[in-house]
Image 1 (cartoon, rainbow, N blue to C red):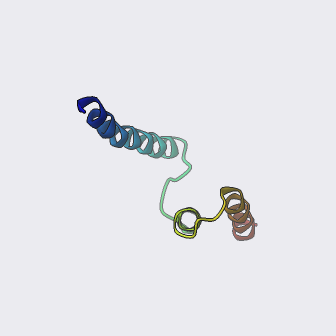
Image 2 (cartoon, helix red, strand yellow):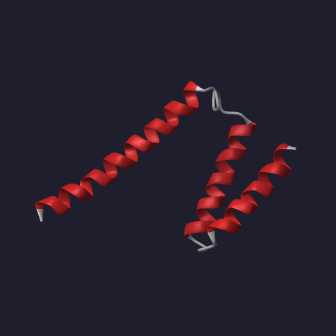
Image 3 (cartoon, rainbow, N blue to C red):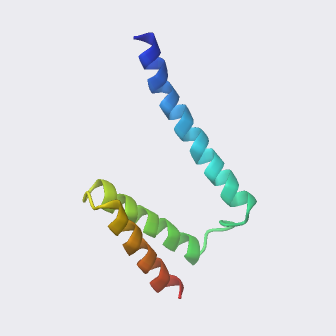
Length: 76
């Protein structure tokens, strides 16, 4: 029982470490330097993808294709 509960607590720690690494990576490489139109559109595409995956239960391949097409349409 103790082992199972400690593994459950580690899930939150690992998630936090991954999120921190992603934020540090984007800031360090200049991918997201300031909040702009480009950054807002990236966040909207990401949020729409999560919504499609978890709320509407769409297939991941179709979400990737649609996200790519939306990105091409916005940034071309």
